[in-house]
Image (cartoon, rainbow, N blue to C red; front, side):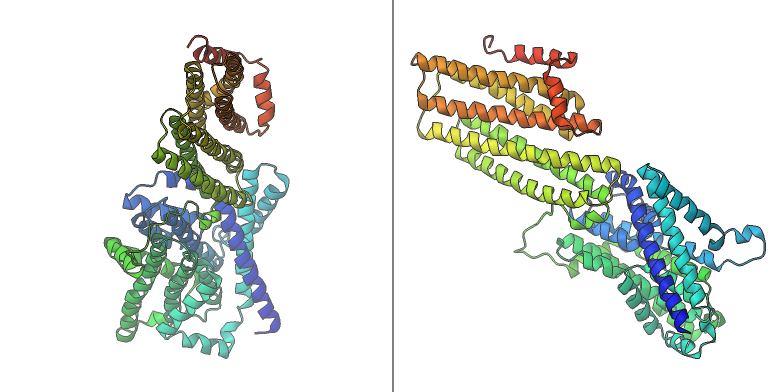
Length: 585
């Protein structure tokens, strides 16, 4: 093998790995939405889980990527360990699709309908279509398709280059001696595992083996153990990804390892016995690219069939490896870095966590309202815990959403991420105002102060109005209810007027000597905080309405609504003005 051949091999390998990465990333991005939908319908049905793993891996063509996703899902509570086991089984079969595609390079024949299936016949056309879509089409979804085609073309070009570079190795004695070493099954397994662990892709390492097989120098006997080892090597990615994860996520990575490791031990034992006793002649013959794909699929299908009745045993083995400790506290990771590999899933997870944060903020502000009538130390501590929790949620969500936004997102996911970034700040500020109201309630309780009857009545009306606006904003966000969102701004304007009226009434009572200055300051602080809570609710609802139209000009929208030119706005404004009319109540 000359230096030029070596350089051609390295160049082909580079193109091959880059094409696989390019195509995989584009497929993950393109499939993000459907993946999110499928995961949302995930059940405990073992068949559903198995098929999900198979389909997802067939789409993104990487069992490592699927398993890393699954580790992230288990770590963040999206799925259970038992669900993950079936998905991993399906993923091991799904990853064999790549080998079948790569086996097309070995097609030979003189007739046209055979030749059209050779990569050198259709890859140039796919590359042309891909570059045209990527460079000249503005639609992002079509650009993604172009990137998939370009990645596939690059992958197949690299495969062809590798095959061409090693084509002369069959006549090199040294190469034959190296391959002879792999006739030892254990060395073959180790070689396959090491190669796959280094490049972290069983599909890529199988492709490299197929390129070497194109020389005709790789025998069946040498190839089978290497293929088995490649399935063990692919577990390294998942094992690395589980570092720092919770115990169930670590168990998921070990399930993947045990599935392939024990499967290899069983099948390698059978293979070695057959090789020694029966000594089939075909094991000494050369193996083709097509046959490598066949062996790869057969290994994974047989392993899956063998393990299918024993999923509980796999689960038990993983639990024995990663044990529960009595002193260990259950730790729930809200967001997982591994999900960033699939931005669509990460955005969906952010939405779920943001809904939890919204619920915390809403419950916290409502708890603070009850303290104004009946101060309780228990409720007071609950408000403080809720505010602290909301702060932590905002910190984690904000940082995580920034990372997600830096990924390649679809238009819909980009809109969702932007919406969440805008709204988590408002929910966090609502919990801050809860603490301010708590402090006012504590001052009233400590100093044994009491508002006048009129002040209590007015404050009760405003509390009811703010409670309703909080509920409307929460409903608009969690349930994406635009009808609720539309009602928020008219009610916010009514709350503004209530604040002004209550302050004005207080001044009148102060002048008549019916109220003290001290109580006046406390009342002013309370109604100011209530009015600001309604402002944040207005921001949340306005964001929901604007994002529904893919437009983030929230202030422009709110200004147009406040002009009173919209019939719907006027209808709700009149309704809420009558409902919370201080003179009528």
